[in-house]
Image 1: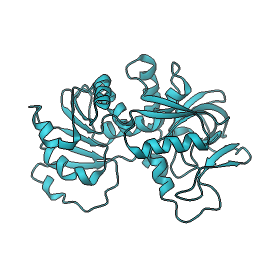
Image 2: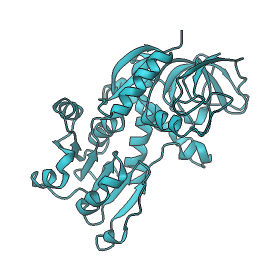
Image 3: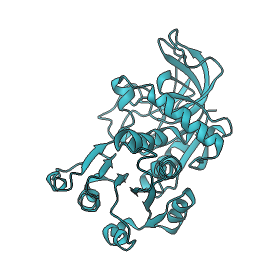
Image 4: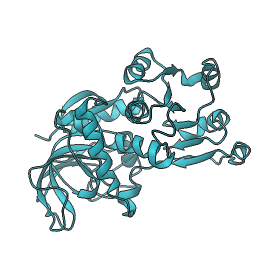
Length: 332
């Protein structure tokens, strides 16, 4: 098999080749047909200390075909088309093949291309878990409540808007700073789009109730005071980016408001009792895509996985102005 890995934080991707692994237990061996890139990829690479003897393979968004299965597998068979994010504690998908626990894999949507499907798993899991597992939004009970999404045009924001509207029927306010990103948020179903640079003032001008839920997809530190001021009494704030500073949680006491975290790798990393929930939610996402209830957030495909396309994709991620997702086709 072929893969691209990184030996140092500032190193270019290196092509590596080795024998195909044998799946054991509940692992599937998947032949990768397309991948998508995410900010976590560049963060993991940046965190490499010193120089590694064996290149680190990153990447956690892929679509492909099962070519072998461990003896304990019961959810999939050889030949099944699948999509998944994977486990950050294992090798990633910048490769021709990958081993993945079947309990965090879903059946790929039938009506989408491999790049369109590969764009969806990590962001869909993050958005679904943030809304329904962490903030515990109940689609019928909480219909009509207000959700503020900071970073509506990015990968997670793009699917969170759709899920909040199609599944939970919430009133969605999304932030976007450019006209193209604002238009994208509206296309996905956002009821209101405001500029994140003047968040409090912009939200106030809407003349709507304070948000019952806030999904902060930007850096936690610059938004902490803003969102804790904005959140409605008894509301919930969900952060996804590690804080670099200490913050005062007491300011939420009089509101009886709360903070939760979403890290989509929690279930596979810790082998939680409900790990199969990721299989189930990916299947639901695939069904919704096939039914046209939501749409892929893929915005561009750069070509096959190689050093040049990976460098280009990572630069776009670092620039921080991408709409939706960036995909790459299989290694040639």
